[in-house]
Amino acid sequence: MKKLNVFVPIIAFLSTTLVYASSSQFFDTLDGQFDASQYLSENAYGFLPVPIIITDPAVDGGLGVIGLFFHENDDERDARLKAMQNADNAANASRHIMPPSVSAAVGVYTGNNSYFVGGGHMGFFNKGNIRYIGGGGYGDINLDFYGAGHIELERPIELNTSATAVMQTLKFKLADSAFFLGPTHRYVNAEIKPTNLGDLIGSFPPEWEDTLNDLFTQSITSSGIGFSAEYDSRNNFFSPETGLKYELNYLWFNDKVGSDVDYQLTELIGLHYFRLTKSWRTALRVEVNYADTSEILPPYAIPYVSLRGIPRARYQGNSTAVTELEFIYEINYRWELNAFAGIGKASNEFSDLNESESLISKGVGFRYLIARRYGFNMGIDIAKGPEDTVFYIQAGSAW
Image (cartoon, rainbow, N blue to C red; front, top):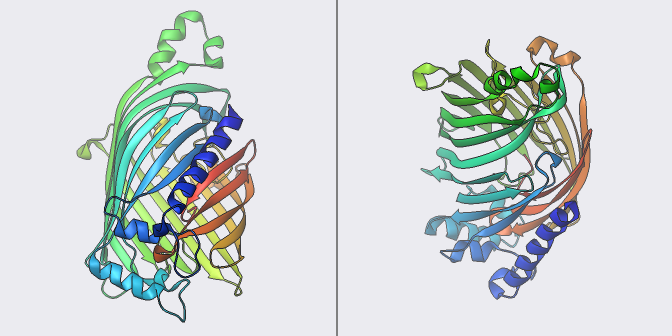
C-alpha cells in the first residue's frame, strides 16, 4: 500500500506534465523549457493540477489533488509579459510584480477512509492594498489522539471527527508600508466520537465503557474572531527568494461569537529569506502558538508541532514552538536543490515549553520553476522525523 501511495502520484504528475508539454502553450519562449505561465493566464479555464501524496501512517497514506486557478486582469497580464520579456533580467523580473489572485479546489481520500473536500480563494484588490484569504470545506477524518503536552497515552485513542470548517482573513495595507492589519475569523462545527478507546477500556471495569465513550464523544462548535497583523517584504508571494514575513494572529473563542469552548489563541510566525551568494540562499522559519484556556479543548483545536517529517497532530499541546532552517542551491533559474532541518516542542504550559522533548526532523528536496510569469515553483521534499519518513509534493514554498 505504501509503495502504491508513493508511485501513483508521481506517475499521475508526470503523465499530466507530458500531456501539457504536447502543446506549444506549455513551452517558454525564453529557454524552450516546460512552463505553464501562458496556459494559466491565457486559457479562461486553465488550472494547475497539484497531486497530493499522503504518507502519514496515522491515516494509512492517501491521494488527492488540488486545482489552482490563477486570475489576473489585462493590465496585470501586460505587466507580467513585459517583465518576462525584459532582456536584462528575464528569468525573475516578474517576481517583483504584485501576485495574481488564486482560487483552489481540493479533494483528498486516505487509506483509513478519511476524506476532505473544499476550496478557497486568495485575492489581491486595489493594487494589492487589500488582501483576502479564505476557505472552507467538509471532512470526515479518522485520526489517532496521542495526548497533549507531557500527557502521552501508551496507546492512542482512535477518533473520528466529522466537521465543517470556514476560515477567512481580510487585511488592509497601512499607508505606503509593508504592514497589513485586519480581522480574522475561524469556525468549526464538529462531531467527535471514539472508534477505539485503546488501553483506557482495559484499565477500567467493563461497565465503564459507556461512560468513557460519552467522555470522548462531543458535538461541539468552536468559533473565534480576532485580528491579524502582518509585515511582508518578500519578493514573491508563492516562492520567495528574499525578504521577511512576520504575522501575528490573535483570536477570542467564546459563547458571544457562537463557541462552545472559551479560550484565546495566539499565533506568531516569522519567515526569513536571504541570498548568500549568486547560487546559494537560506530561509529560516520560527513559529510559536499558544492556546490560553482553563478548559480541555477538542483535539482538533489543540496546537501541534508542524514540521516536515512529523505527522500532523502527532505532538500536541496548548503551547508549541518550531524552528526550521533551509539551504537552497540554484542549479539554474529553473532548477534548485534544498536541504532542511527543524526542531519542535510541545507542552501544556507555556512556562514548561523549554523543558519539553525536542522533536527533530531533516530532509532534502528539489524545485522546478513551473510558471515563470508568476515566480511559481513545484517540487518534492523527503523528510525524516522522530518516527517516520514522509514524502511531499510541494507547490510553491513549503511555508
